[in-house]
Image 1: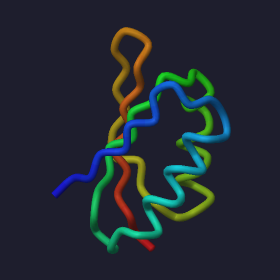
Image 2 (image 1 turned 120 degrees about the vertical axis):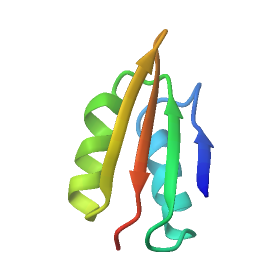
Image 3 (image 1 turned 180 degrees about the vertical axis):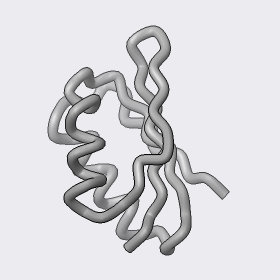
Length: 74
């Protein structure tokens, strides 16, 4: 099952703050789709994944909305 976190309308650093909070409640192996319209998330999400040891599985962009599939590894 893939969880969804809609962070549209939130500006940096709130999408990452919400992402970190949501991921803490998830189990290893679970996946999350983060949806954001903050252009800063294009750099912030991959950096957060690398720093925390989680996997950025996929990134999509459509009409200024970014969707990141993140897999919890730790």
